[in-house]
View 1 (cartoon, rainbow, N blue to C red):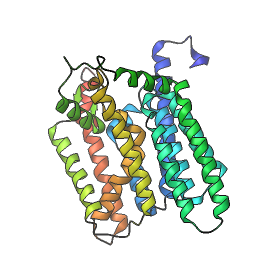
View 2: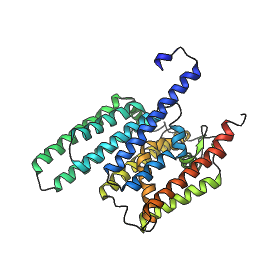
View 3: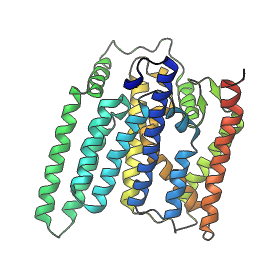
View 4: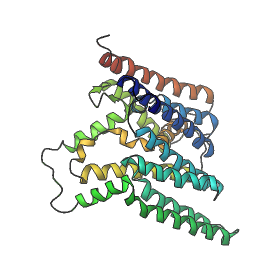
Length: 331
C-alpha cells in the first residue's frame, strides 16, 4: 500500500485484500507441493488441493483484511519442511523451511503458538526414526541431535516474539483468581459456533448458511471418517508417517484452541473456526482421503471429479444463499 498511501481508504483496503488473496493462492500452491511430497496419488492430490479452493469459509477469511493468511502460509511452509525432512532426511531446504516457517508464523499471529510443541514432538519422532536405522547411524544421530538442539532453542526464543509474549500472558492468566466465568457464552454454544464457522458463517459470525447446508457438510464429514475406519479402496496409498504428521498437526492446533477457550478469561468469545486454519492443509488431506478410501475401486477420475463438483456446488450454494443476499441485498 505504500506507493498509494495517499489514495482513498477504499483503494487501500482493496490492496490489502488483494495481498490476502495472493497469500491464499500461495497456500494452495504449497498444499499441492505437500500432497505430492507425501506421495499422494495425483488424482487425490488434486481433490485435496481443490477442496481448499472450494472451502467457503477458508476462501472468505483469506480474501479479507487480516493477518490470518500470512500465518497460515508460514505454518504450511513449516509443515512442508517437516514432510520433506521425514521423507528425504536432513537437507538445507527442508530445515530452512521448518525454522523459517515456524519463526515467521510466530511473529505473525497467535494461532501459530501450537507450532512450538509441535516442533519438539516432530523432532523427537524424527530422531527416533534415525535411531532405528542401522545405516550411517553415526552421521544420522549427530544430525538428529543437532536438529533437536536447534528446535529446542527455537522453542525457548518465542517469549521474545509477539506469540511468545501472548503465551506468557495466557499462562499468567491461569493463576488463581484470574479466571472468571461470569457472563461468558455457554460452552456448547462456543463449540457449535466454532464448528459452523469453520465451514460457512460469514460477516463476523452473523451470516449463517442454514441448517440444511450444515447437515450436508456434517454427513460428508461422517462419510470421510467412515472411509478412514472401514476403507473400501486401497488405491489411496499413503505412508503411515504421513498420517501421523498430518494428524499430529491437526491435534495440536485443536488442542491449543481448546486450551485457550476453556482456560483463558473471555476465551469463549473467540469461538471462530478460522483459528484452526493453520491446519487447513492437513484437514483437507483427511477429508479428501476419507472420501477416496470410502468409494470402491475403479473410475478414479470420475470419483475425483465428483468430489470436486460436490464441494463446488456447496461453495456456490453458500455464496448464492448466504453471502450474496446479505452483502448485496441493497444492490
